[in-house]
Image 1 (tube, helix red, strand yellow):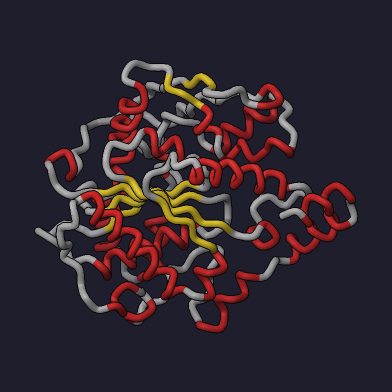
Image 2 (cartoon, helix red, strand yellow):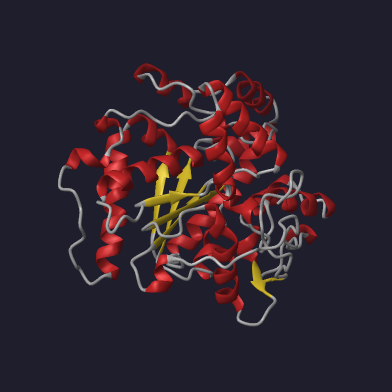
Length: 362
């Protein structure tokens, strides 16, 4: 696309939803955003050729470590599995992937790293590339910003704000073919933004639409959910945000307890920071055990070294993320403590009886 146009070559067709259950306070399911533009080609996935392929969805609220967990999974799986026939092991979304030719030219012509990064940033701005999140690379279900607009129109209170993060679960497809159609269309829309030959396709979005993604799956799908204490997450700095936090996770854990999600893992952000290697090892085992169940116990081509499951053990630090700017060993624990803005929010909460009482029930 020419500079200034949307970076996502997708059709403008949307699938409308009708509520599966009545949303409280008059809230309704928002229609999907129509910002992505038309698709130019059809994407072919490895699973459509009969090859082994899995989807991994990373779920969580805003600023709870979803990006960190996504990269941790990609690195750990890359270490735990050996490449076969030149296929990548794990692929996460990259919104600049459609412009890889331009990036290669920029890299070749740059005289320094700084000049290349500047040219790459210009490509990102000129082509209006979205964030590397699944919600921004599709138009089949409402993005978080779309939901906020709908909830404001409906005057939804904070007590029901948890539905912002689970709104897609409350919808049923208003189209022929149902969830299967949405699942196949979603893959086609996401296709240009990752290596579709990879064994593991990793998508992350700061929401808890776990049941929605379970319903539309067209390949074996693992859901990995991260939970972070609301005092530290700095997601929404308003009193009573714990109402939204409790509502969203209560909805999720109810689905898990009822057995509606087939393959999942729940990760504590605090454990991921404090006991990184042990958490990574358990996550890799969740992946391997799920594959064994599905493949009838056939042996996978796995490296035997237990140390290989941890990016730290190979000398690689964490990817630099906005919320994780330091790689030094002594710095990681700083993210377990609230920032000044969060402390002010919770001080305000403590002065309000209703907010204080609700917080004590967390």
